[in-house]
Amino acid sequence: MSDAPPIYEGAPPTDEQKRLVALFDELEKKQVEFLDQAGKRVVELCTALLGVFFGVLAFGDKFPPPYLDGSLPAQILTLGTLVFYIAAMLASLYAVQPREYRRYQHNLTEMRKELANIISFKSRWVKVAGMLFFLGTVWLALLIVAIVFG
Image (tube, rainbow, N blue to C red):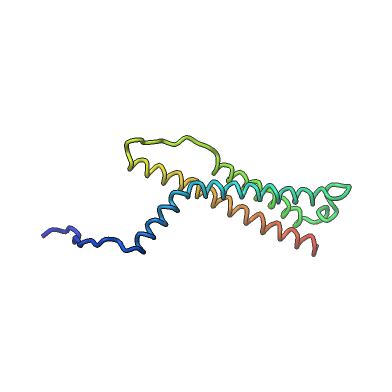
């Protein structure tokens, strides 16, 4: 006997199934654009928070400010926050940088693989950027707590 899987008779898709397929087609079509926009948004947020961060550090007539001068935890948190935000910005920029892709005009299988690679690459770097941004924000919150209670 054969170990082949059984063959089932098909049925035409229902309206609900057709809507589901259409929804996933639309999601797939917009995935690359969405990831690019998400990466750009992380860059914008990092830029804004770094501006605020540097504004707070430069506040006053001497550097470092008195609330950082004698506090090692606040200094470490300041440096960590800066590193996380800059790393998040760099990861986002890497995700959205234009790059060359192979275009297989007559091979749909390879074209689909290339699209999957594009989405995987962008998704991975946007996730890394998001995590670094999150960590930078947590460290910024801890820095504020250290300054207020330090």
